Image (cartoon, rainbow, N blue to C red):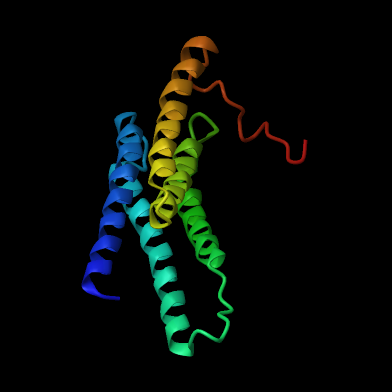
Length: 168
């Protein structure tokens, strides 16, 4: 991969990092554990993984010639990203001891969504990525207001982990 293509790839990582940072700032402003830096790193890493997958497939095609078929599956790169991010998300979700509730589920979902933003940028889907940031901000901010003001939810009003019953 020549230097100019690497600079294009680097610009994609920067775009993803900036978009992920927008979501992270919103999460950080309301005191959530996964903030700006976490979201930036996840978006950038996801973009980089997809770009590296593209490079590997391209290099493999060049090394075996044009008449042979590549038996690679680029979807596996996305699958690996989702799996890795799921572990980070699972580490974010905790059970609050005093309130006996599960907290930070939205932060974990934001992390997963941020990974998808990185994949969008790597695949040159900039409008989709930017529009998705707007959607996440509307969900995280707009529905938070709806939750608190319209539905009048109070702290501790969610279902207790002790009361939860599986498969019901």
